Length: 388
Image 1: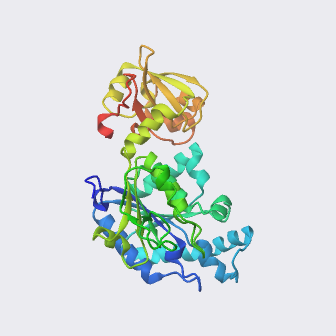
Image 2: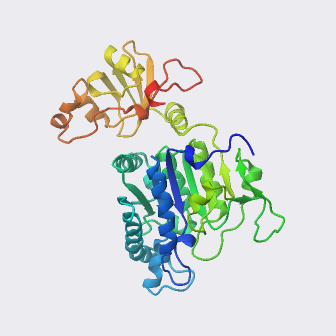
Image 3: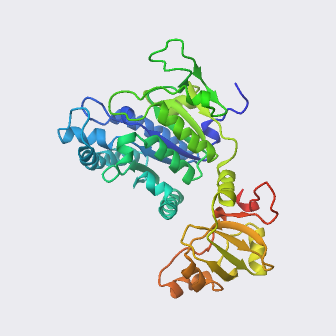
């Protein structure tokens, strides 16, 4: 086994994706409450060890359709959305009940892929989830299938989990499935298929090993799991595919149960910094004074008081260039205010923001987590020391 093989204990922020086939009985539509209680024991153990945990759960459609009498295969899109609306309530209650036994506050968050991909919605979702984690809650994210269409049609729940993991700078995403990892071929059809415990690089040969999606209510399969792997690995997040069918599946993996690990080449924060530094087209420029220059070099956030000029037309969440007092590029970052509001608050203390704008926004124009120093124009992305 490669020395690079990670383990769950090394991760600080973990996203756990749960598929419908594990959570819901495909015949009756009933939630597997005993299994959920055992999984929650694992989640509670992770939180007790100081880890931040986010759950991305499928199952609302599978739970709701039986209650609406939609028992046939191949139901219509609008029927799937109606089933999701019914099942979502029951699913949320099941999570709340299971987590309450461990004195864990659960928070339900409904997202679509668009919420993770459109920048301003991305920032809002990221801020909400970050606040929930900071307050000790366990967010349970469900696909907003009552209004979404692509997730229902194409089985993008794994991809949604991957987007959430990257959005939240997670160290590890765990996909609990009805299979114990990736095989060289579909083991249901090829008895000679070999299990791969470790994937160090996602090559075309690896992607070609994916089989077809299983029958039933599950809409994923290995194809979508490898698509999710490509997203999280580029974001610096490790991924694990594990068999979730038994009780306490996360504890089983920690005890050595067979699974497949996918390794990322960089850490999540480094990947995000590279994305900010090189992948985004700047929409404006902020010039700072000497005090702000020193603060940024020390790893601090950019506050309005240190900004002396705002150029360009940008919206909240857009990338901007930060210039030093000599007009040279110092950094790039994602700005927390649009251009008009940035001009109103530049040069003022953070405590004056509400009075000048009429609402209470963030104290920073650019938070240090959304900022990367680029002054040296080097090939390596330079990060503030305090954010590493």
